[in-house]
Length: 548
Image 1 (tube, rainbow, N blue to C red):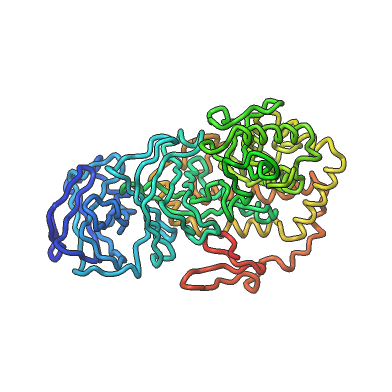
Image 2 (cartoon, rainbow, N blue to C red):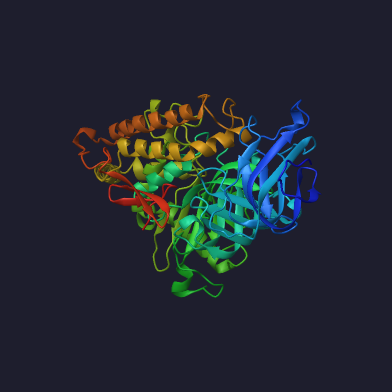
């Protein structure tokens, strides 16, 4: 390495894909610079390289200082108040530090944590694993240290943790999804739940990066009992920028997640045996250890009690109860949550609504409730098998949606063959429309998500240059991020009209005077140094989630 005048000096460190300094004492980094001595490009590219600072020689507690987001620039100021003993530059994934010279500038001192660096306007999740080991499957937990910087650099959450891969088909993408588990429970990014387990959803085939969040907003508007918490984040793993993710709740039994009675291994009789349970009718159930096949051939995973603690009596009870629901849904299925879950799937045009469905059962209640909603990467016009969704005359689950087991027949019996339920569904749709579920509301919400993601999406598609490549089930190449979002915006408007026609609702009767159509209805509010949006009497975080 070569150092510019007044650059910090120290013992040179090198790891092949990274280069840095061990400083004699902590220093607050104020700027970084980089130079390619080999100007032929190729492996010497620095685009998306990460500068990090740490107070451990193994860089387990490292925080990002800056990211190279423009190769025409060779100098960047750093706004981080913490002092570091060790600093380094990590080359982009698959590249070498050979032929790259970097310099760090700063002032001596331990500093403080009053302001830390983010890569964009989004929170940054910085993950470092023991010996830089990359997660490689869904079973093996890798020891890690995780730091989350948020609130414009003014808030830090750090803890030891583990990380592994998660998901099913989404694991086949080069941008991997992860499950993280902190050593301690945390309210992450202002989440309602205080928990150890969280998911990092990769959204590889969703080029808007927002489809899950849009569906969760529909779930909130449908007044589902529980909608998963979700926030957009930038993820860095061992100094490698991984892209824009959604940090979401782990679907599990816990306060402010799926709230059912917690069970012990002694709950094998009487009222205690009746709950609570969390199960998933799932096309991938056959891959799980704790599962059963229903009498009608549907694979069902038992998510709670967990496979390492559930007793034979408990597993047998919930299997029998699910079979009773399939045979007599009028008695054993909660139609309120079923109908709302159904409307989220149909309004979003989700191919996979009945490919995977969560159910939960409360203690002392014979009813199976439906929810939460989950997995919308193929929704909102993002599946070549269903595109264009609004050209189909019937519901998506009946025409070209993916269903597991006998769920299509079950849903048919409820929403198509029952005259009473068809009337209930029409009335529910009308009530929701009049309560504020409108195309204007949703298009404004899409606008807000687009603005929120604009910085991060640019980095994401530098890391994963797939904007003009068909991935997963993309029906069309729209050519730009803005055009991808326009596709969703257009679909949303057309889908409301389609649903109104299908369910016999006259949209001209809507009174839209109370919608957020002028500045008096939408206000930006600063609270405790964080920006919130006030819309129609509801306070939202910048991530688009409602506050209490």
